[in-house]
Image 1 (cartoon, rainbow, N blue to C red):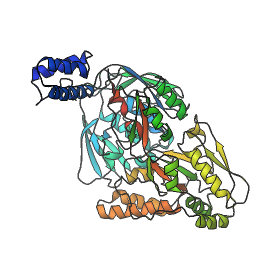
Image 2 (spheres, rainbow, N blue to C red):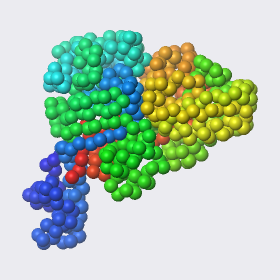
Image 3 (cartoon, rainbow, N blue to C red):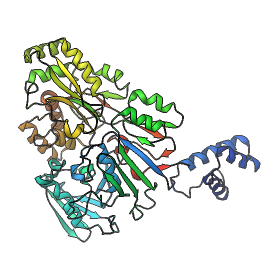
Length: 539
């Protein structure tokens, strides 16, 4: 809402300005009501107008203030290099300090950002016209060469980009004008603007090798960055978006223990926290000064059984474990209803091209027993690695440990600390847990986590037919054929990969009630990690 907002249709513009001005100076609803009744207005109408005015004022963004925000991870591997970001803490900083060519709105549709326009005739050659007047934090103007460098560096194996599987489809990026770049793909992909709106494809300065200064075009500038400790951003006064951002400063830290995040929030030490446990919702909401913001999205915590090592290289072991999941009961007891059923494939029911026809895998102890006994893994303890930072993994593992013991499988549940879990343990054990944030399209999700050569292929699953079909679906422009291809791909993951997904959970963020501006973006919590330029503090 604009700061010069009026109350049309209720009272005249002069009276409207007077009331909103009083609210800005600290008046409350009762004060406005007194003003109106003193002027001779009937009590019922005055009460209605006072309520509307107070609401309108509360929804008007205000500048100023500082907040402290806690994510759920912190490690010495924390980075400001968009190509290497791997978790929510990294993504938050990415959105604070950088922009992409596009961004994704509340329906996950791509919208112009650093590119003010993007067009294509064949989904293979794309033209992006760059926004004029954009500068980096050090004053350097944005140029096509910055875009070329930012996109093409993902293709270099030496960079170690997390987005390399997505960037490999880009054949070339060229400057076709002083404020224009053309991207040519190896094959058509109608989702390119969606891909470019994701975390890793933020634009950096041409030639950047040291990212600790976080020089970008984003709403905040780096004031301090200590990997594993905290990052502090201050308002970018030269930001290209008028009147943005609203806050003076944001401090972002990673706190692995959910209880510590919630305690910090309730004590007033934190203003916004990621990943509130469902069991903490009533405690947060009941404080009177705090609230929980729920985003129905597709994050999931998954059992990872490496297909390239024992026991996960035995298909019967993998299928037996998948049959042990009592999914409905897990939703009720672990996330207290804040989730939807999973089916051992990563596409959330709200996503385009979700395959509704895939038969739900039931909880079937008899089949689990048959497969696990056939797997014959022996009675020796099998380490199962969990961590509080993989939300729900401890509870899921405890249930599976109890169930599997009935059939002669002995799991040794090993709890690892939150700090450093993603760098030191994720994907590094034969049996463990991951926690994956949703991505905006089926292609991105499958390319990042299931393609044979993907760096984040959690279970080390390799399937040539899957890889070939994934590339074909990306290039397919016929919607019906593309839908069938994605249905087949989801079926392959469901049946053969080493991933078991019991449920998708809502993202629950706790916040000070004075913090305004949050709205759902179904890529995860904290507005898909992009909250920084949208929120403000009420008086």
